[in-house]
Each structure stands twice: as C-alpha cells, then as structure tokens.
Image 1 (cartoon, rainbow, N blue to C red):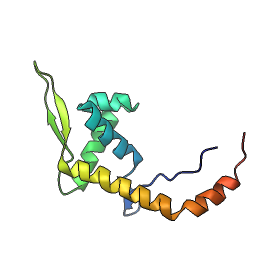
Image 2: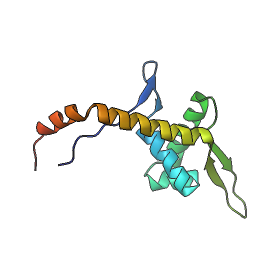
Image 3: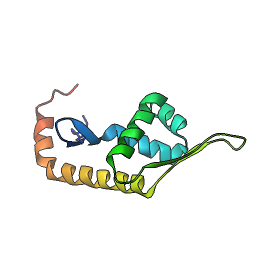
Image 4: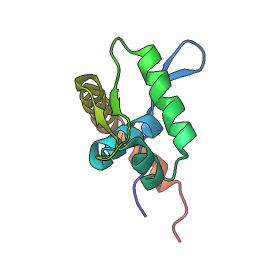
Length: 116
C-alpha cells in the first residue's frame, strides 16, 4: 500500500481557494502543452473550467499567470508568466514541507488502513 499523501489547498477567507492541486496541475499542463485547451484536455478538465481557474488566479494575484495568443495561421498558444512559475515552485515547497512535517502521523494513519 502507498503511504498517505497530502493534498494542500491555500485558502483565504471562509472558502476562497487561492491555490490547490487542480490549479497547479493546470498550470503544469499549460507549461507542457503550451495551450490552454490542450492542457485542459490532457488532465481531463473542461476548457470552460480551465479558463475559469485561470481567471480566478488572475483576479487574485498581483500579476497574471498566463499570456495567451489568439489562433491564426501559426495557431494560438498560451505561455505561463514568471508569476505562474513562482506559484508552482512555492506550492511544491509547501507540499514538501508539509509532507516532511507530517511523515510520522501519516505513517500512523497508514497503519490503520486495511491492506488488500
């Protein structure tokens, strides 16, 4: 059995998720695919949902996370900004720190779970 992992959400206010695994997965997919629509498809997310998540990030953060180019003969595309790269990095750091800090507790949780 795999050890339990953490999925972190950074929340402001009551329930306003600033950052979570879905947004990070989308940003990472955009970095790889260089297209919002291809990125959304690659992670099983609708284009509309992906666009809404990008809008949320852009409205919440001091700088935008995405530069888009409309299609044409050369096709469109999306490029992450430095803010997006920093966001991915800081989320990974948060996850690494949280995983390290909770290793003993997660091991204890694992000992309580049935094995197949």
